[in-house]
Length: 353
Image (cartoon, rainbow, N blue to C red; front, side, top):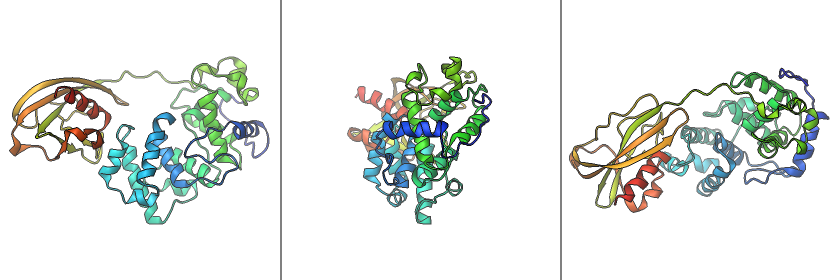
């Protein structure tokens, strides 16, 4: 076993690949976007959609969103023809909203080309498709040999080879080691097998090594140090930002604006705010003169910062100078597709009505 992450290709034969595939044939998770071992290849649209949704998100969180998207847009062509605002609203609550913008851009390019390309290199040419997603779609949907490394695979392989270099720098060694054990055939099943193994057995805490099909090959298990991998660099403390959201209600409707297309929560419907961002606090000034009162505070965690958002309620606003937007019926606010932080503020405002 190579602790450095260097490895030798095992091809289609024995060792890690054969052991994992034999386990996966019996234990594969049943997921709505997955073709089980022996089934026909899955629809690349469904594979791609699920992989984009699953980035930095759990399977449990994705299931309902995946079903909703397929119901609304059953093909990549249907998604490509959808309005940006409708897609962003359907995505609301799933987080990392740049993924939704990239999803639309990619769908439109795929529709223009007449379908998904088959190879990893060609898939990388599509807008918004990074190394992981391109490899996953190539391997799972098209049976191409590609090296697929997500967080679960990262954990399994770092333990298998006892790769001690801390993340993120250690990812190159983990990818090289994964390349060394990826078989020439059934690369998609192999990748999904590693994902399932990381989800169910090689877990973050208390890995179930006695049940692991790769136990005999695992350097970390042999050393009794499985839980120490992957080694992670010390986290930097997240800053806390402050901002204000403004609830302007008239005749049973609340003013919503559409955020600019790029940047934080880009393209989403939202309450007007005071310009807070990941880098700076908001200025706390209301967008228009009016009779304002405090509505409370919500807290929300983003990837790189935490936000403390003050809610201000307006009983009477200067209608001649309102921010550009549209009034949305308050009783239908759940259908507006507000991102989570503004949905929290809306619920707080409703409690004051």
